[in-house]
Length: 319
Image (cartoon, rainbow, N blue to C red; front, side, top):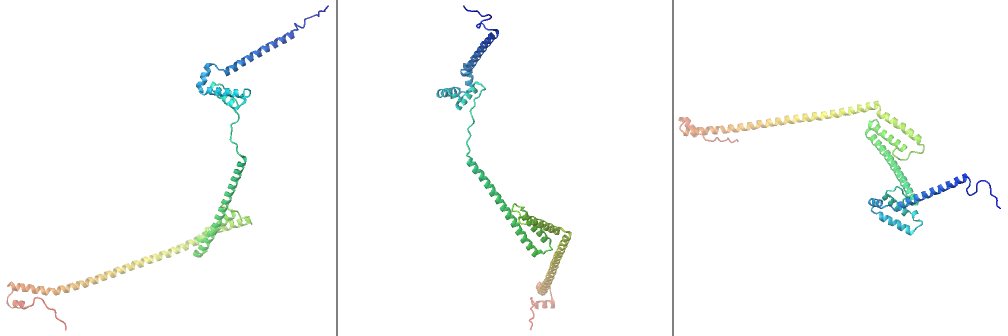
């Protein structure tokens, strides 16, 4: 004989137990509903309706080609085709045609690999080229500085011989020589700086340059040079005036002599012409008298004398 326990049985359970069972049923139903909605949405994405396909085809005419490529990938690798880059590229094109914003990662873009050894060689080559150019520029600067020193030294010697130490030209040349020296010691044109006692030599060179500039620009020197120039200019002016005067006097003398010569020649000519005229006059007169006698205009002894006279007068021969 069985005994009946007091209170509620295990089948019906207590109120908390019933509540837990109810919540479990509801959660299971909710999960089923969500799974169904997800399945429907996936089916909708994979198999779009006819109108959506036509709109997508208008956007991209290659849509059927993309779908075929996706099917070929799935056939070749049914389990892992979605993980490939090719699938990501094809699916992104399909999504773009349908207007779906989701995009799959296509992976990093392929960039050409640069050989580090080549890059290293190029870097070293560039450094060597820059060093070579720098050395060449220094060498050119050094040559230029040395040439300037030699040229200014030769100019100073030449001017000393031609113009003397006290001339302004010599003092200006000395300034140029000292400036070229200082430029060489400082490496002013890109050459090497003086290293052995460099600071001392540069300081002494600056002092010599300042001294030479003071001498070249001093008022006493300028006055002396100005006086010498004025004296030289005055001598040149006097010489020029003297030459002009001599030239003028010579021209006057020549003119006077020419006039005297012409006057003398004219007088001789007139004298000669007068003598010839006087010689010809008696002959003409005799001829006229002869014509008058022939015409019967003369009479008596005068006519007899005219008729007896010769037409031309004969010159008396000197014994």
